[in-house]
Length: 402
Image (cartoon, rainbow, N blue to C red; front, side):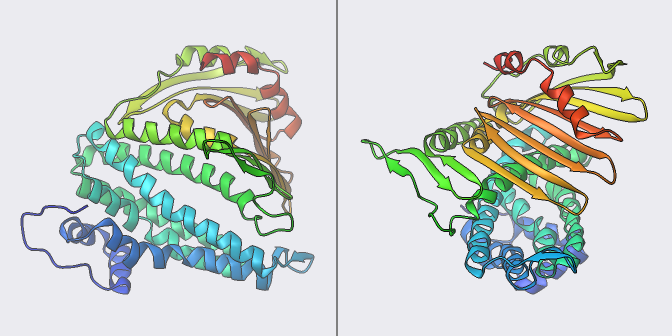
């Protein structure tokens, strides 16, 4: 793709100069980026690929040379082949995410008073990621990994760039940025879920163990992922087609599904739990640029603890969740103070995350392709969070979105 401009423009500067300029003086740099001649291929080759490779390479070196775990107590060095395999998968998903994010940015523009322009949307997705990609270098040494938080500066770059390149009024820039960030988070979670088991396809047993094709050439059966779970090829293919249809609808500014009435989502929540009444109920239903979602939230005060319950109809994001459900993952990660766990069973994805020292965590269940139920708690145990979610009528919740 190319873009017509009204005045002569200079080509993009060398990589290092562009990185320095976008980080140190983002506003004038976005003005330059808006009108410089470019296309998707040149941006990929000259900017995205070299920067997106930093994190995966650093992570592979860190895991294979320095290892993962608790320094001085327990540490495990990932075999170089596995670390390299994971780096390749992480790198490819990063490239895909830029393109998908650009589609979303372009589709959302009219909803915030802006103008659709695929090339400019791609520029925003590409250049706003600069800080995050650079921060990936800290993965090379485990003690420095926490410095990766510096990559959040990319959110500011996104906020500055969106109104300039997509011609969105400044007063709507915050809303546009917020919605885009929400989509980024959803994409990041789904891609992380996908990449976790795929990292292990170099393990004994083989990534394609159990794979087959049907008479039409379509993939059928499951792919065994030793130590992580399996991948349902038929579900993955269906999810891909669903995502394509939803992406096309988003580009046309049309929602592909009608979300559940938020009041019905709220009605799924118990009036009381462990003697505590449901309080601070809120509901919302939003649609912009073909993306439709609905939410209901409430709080339960349990003695010294608090639990926040949220029920969401992911609506137009169901293609992404369907892809996540194609991964029959069973993975547990133990940390110094707690654990993280993801389990897929009977079409439901269950996620647990708990910190014993802080007595806080979250428990969520993705019911069907659209309804997600999550309990987040402070000063409560995991059993309390599980009891609240699992005690709800999950079959009824799944039925609402059919």
